[in-house]
Image (cartoon, rainbow, N blue to C red; front, side):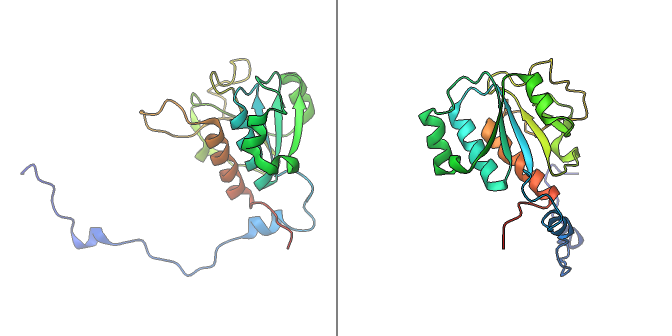
Length: 195
């Protein structure tokens, strides 16, 4: 056999059939029904001791977009009135629902018993293995060091990562949080906008 690639055969060129079936939006209808807790956040996003105000500002803006609540576990490396944070969050910051915790134990006591997921490049499971629900707690670590071993066990089934190629050490925190939040929205029916 020669080293050349063979030409694809006609049967290998078939494209998946397009369906005319309507999109199954039962999850969205259920989440947005009058019986649902409309004033509850779609998710709780936790930043553990964040270091870069621009990341926190961008994550806050995404939280506003999907009706999620942003939690800061102190100490943060910046003041929450930092100009860089406000600039990244733009005028959306005024609409952000925010919670504060003086330390990890304080956060756990405030959010118990909601399910928690921990995001780390060291986690064994990927985000595609998770089954999210409205009101989940999504925990992200520091930009430089991630979550400490006292919080993160990479073997824990609640520890999740975004799959990346071997050429990338890690993704930006705001990018990661945005991907996670919108996958959470996709699974849980999305943000309920008043009609």
